[in-house]
Amino acid sequence: MKKGKKLYEGKAKIIYASPQKNLLIQHFKDDATAFNNQKKASIEGKGILNNRISEYILSNLNQVGIKNHLVKRINMREQLVKSVEIIPIEFIVRNIAAGSLSSKLGIEEGTVLDRPLVEYCLKNDELGDPMVSREHILNFNWLNVMDLDWITEECKRINDFLQGLFRGVGIRLVDFKVEFGKTSNDEIILADEISPDTCRLWDEKTERKLDKDIFRKDLGSLVEGYQEVARRLNILHEQSNIKPISFPKPKEVKIKKK
Ligand code: TMP
Image (tube, rainbow, N blue to C red; front, side, top):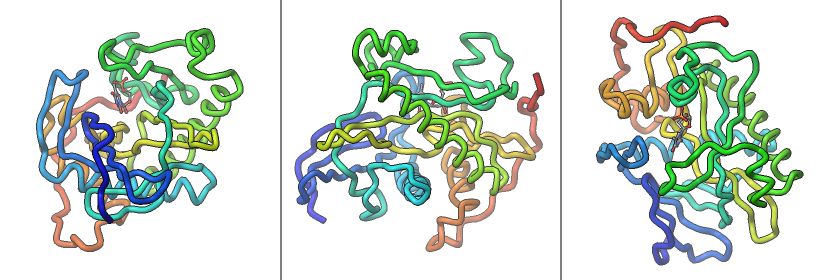
């Protein structure tokens, strides 16, 4: 498929025009950033893995009625997606305390939450994506109450589905971030990507991290972690020569009951 002009370049993806009306091409780069762009690297193969993993997750979500922007994967690094206007809120769902929940609120990493916790962050790199409340979202008309409530429920449905999907392959879904967009018909659908860049994924037995924390915290080979996720989801058919990874003895946090 012939790519049109570049419309937007983010930290991990590029959006191009496509020859088809209301459709765009989403290209996955190898670039990795953390801590609001303060830490950067190019990690060969990351884009290919995220393209495959996100395609797998979004097409499975579609099958259970969670509408999203994915039309189809078109090559190793690109997907055809529906054109949407991205809602400027990042929706974070947490099942186990980690990351900024632990560093900002002092909740010990590994603490299992009583119920999924949904957080909202304003999508604004210059401000460092600050956390905002439901009241901020309504007060500044970033969303109306009906749409905010609907998206919050949709996030919980996505969480239920993803928890099951990953539990089935021995992975704990610690938390994740999703974005939504509005189509030209004003329909709200899930957009962006769901991949180890946007989730925290811990091996159930060893608690080894299989997500972007490998890069954030210098825990080893990011590509090996992402390959392990793809291998367990059984989506690397044409690359069956990929070696299974031998896990080092865990020295990471233990899951704690509150
Ligand atoms: P946090 O603990 O750093 O707030 O991250 C929560 C989840 O959101 C985690 O799975 C990583 C994901 N995330 C993104 O996808 N993009 C971001 O810019 C940030 C800060 C987090």
